[in-house]
Length: 118
Image 1 (cartoon, rainbow, N blue to C red):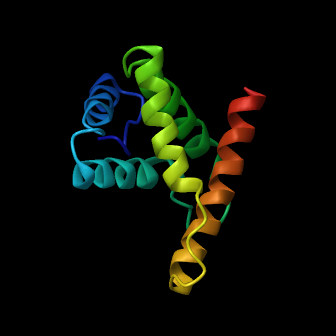
Image 2 (cartoon, one colour; image 1 turned 90 degrees about the vertical axis):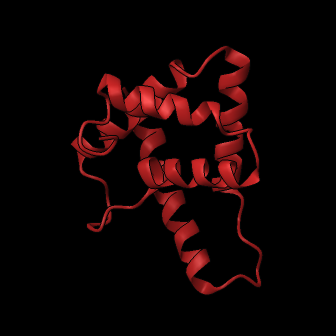
């Protein structure tokens, strides 16, 4: 539901509930971070995200950040998510990890551009 209708009330509510669980324990945090990485930062098979897909991801992101509690709660989980996504992997990590990180950074650039331009 979060992929097919990203801005639906049900999808936003489900994602906000996940956000509230991010500080439960390490395994839950990893699962939540991975879920949002897949929802928002996964690259398109075509390379660049299609305009509608990019807009949908940005709209969902804004709705979830807006619906995720107080400003302190919002900034803490978002900071945790972005830090884990943007931190470069260690040099001794497998090559695939580095490729995934580079793809995530490219999607981040597209999302930021969309958010700033609109």
